[in-house]
Amino acid sequence: MFENTKVLVAGGSGFIGANLIERLRSLGAQVRGTLFKSPAVIQDPAVEYIWCDLTKMEDCRKAVEGMDYVFMCAANTSGAAVMRSNPLAHVTPNVLMNTQLIEAAYQAGVKKYCFISSSAAYPPTDDRPVREDEMFLDDPYDVYYAVGWMKRYAEVLCKVYSQKIKKPMPTVVIRPSNMYGPYDKFDFAVSHVTSALIRRVVERQNPMDIWGTGEDVRDLLYIDDFIDGMLLAFEKAQDYLAVNVAAGEGHSVKEVLHMLLEIDGYENADVRFDPSKPSTIPIRLVDTTYAESMGIKAKTSLRDGLQKSVEWYRKNPFVPGA
Image (cartoon, rainbow, N blue to C red; front, top):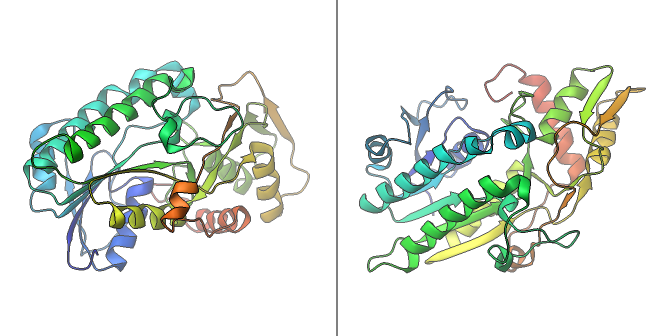
């Protein structure tokens, strides 16, 4: 599908964007990536990088010009501490970017558009995996209220452009679980739980202070499996498609940490959990039935994915993503 096509990856230096650029290049696509604050991490002379601010409409128009497909991977993101202390950091810039880039893509005649949403936008379902049709049944968890509604608004926009106007543009909404792997954010100020644990283990922190109780459960998806699922969903979408892309199983923070300590041979670590520090929600499981009906299924076990991630981080501690 992508050979000799022109594809924009908005957020080309980010975690998803960098991995997507690598994959699209291997599939023969002509790739353009947007950069904002961070330099490119995929050093490929065949990739066209442009510096732009996607909160500005003129920059959005410049980014999408001449493109066949657009993947909206750009977002202002951070960890639990920022989410609790300043929830609007996830709202204002993202609403501007999401609104303007999809309009620019539509005006430019883009053939298909992909938006990366989040399973954090779902309402609470306790320990039951959440299905796609439950997105708008209730409010998101309170800690995710601001970012969740921001994501939901962008999803509604995608549906409008693909189903509610005279000349529609097909759109794909991907709702990922917690991803990890190469080019993830390893800066403690903005990192998510898995990348933060990897860095603490590799650096042999002692004592090792872990935020929360360690009992929080997440669905952890290796980035290669996410890219596989996203591209397959993108290929299959005809007008509007919203789908979970996840591993389909949950693991506690303690379980992930113990597996990392074993994988990297860190014995007798002095681990100290701190329940007073910010965390998000106790459990989030994601239903993958619909995804599996389309052939989307994670192939990488948690142990293998963590092993690959540790090996990558040891070799690349100074790249922008790490």
